[in-house]
Image: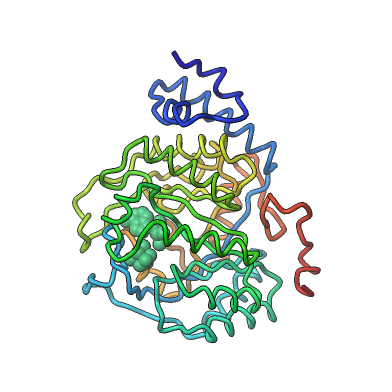
Length: 355
Ligand code: 5AD
Ligand code: SF4
């Protein structure tokens, strides 16, 4: 018989204990888990919430992930690519809002070659005192190296599922082992790395989610993201059920218990499924919010899944709205870059510009 109160205060959790926590159904028990996760978040991350401004600069993708609206075979999606100068301009707008991480995100789009991405990174770094996170899918090892030299700080590559068989079903052309090799290589290059999974994908079990959390620990991530699956039209999974909000919240909470000093976002997918999703995530272990600040007319075309929350036209309104939400929780927006919690001393913003 598992003892909840004891487990919540253990330093290391076994897989069985993780499964037990993920499976809690009684609302008082869940609340105990959430409170403990919130406490651990306060200890390791404090009260600050880090904002990461996302620029989705291309919705073209050469992959065909079964769950994703950007998959190559989705011919009904209008595709776009932003030009380098537009991307650099969008980054300046974000940094002027006082958001000090820019996430450059796209499908796997090899239209942008190594040098073009390097140019964009370098130019942003010249003009704005920000950290740059790349989220471009699996690219070449040489490219990762060049982009690090050009000034990229972090790489986000979600593993999506730790179950190799499911991984192969969802991705066909790609293999889990390959993805993990990329993540490990990125880490050796000095990138701060982020990964994570989706909750509620077809075939997924609670056992799989426990493995996902343990894999995040094994990878020694700097950031771990857990967002619910949302069925997307014109994909093979269009008629499947969406992920469960409470299970997603329990996953965030258990991940905080297990991973401790990592950044964990309250994802846009969670905010899309539940209008209080962002606040709920921040209350059960999350310490990061990633607003989509892609300029129009592109933003509404980045349809990974439908009806994304916060398609707010005006970046100023978006920042003000987030500030209100975050302050109403008794938290505050961080004023630094929010580098890895695993780095001993976070480089000051001005120093990092010289480096
Ligand atoms: N629902 C929720 N998240 C999704 N992603 C892709 N498709 C979906 C979906 N249908 C997430 C994946 C991927 C990122 C681009 O978006 O985690 O890494
Ligand atoms: Fe492409 Fe990423 Fe969507 Fe897969 S999840 S189809 S790689 S954008």
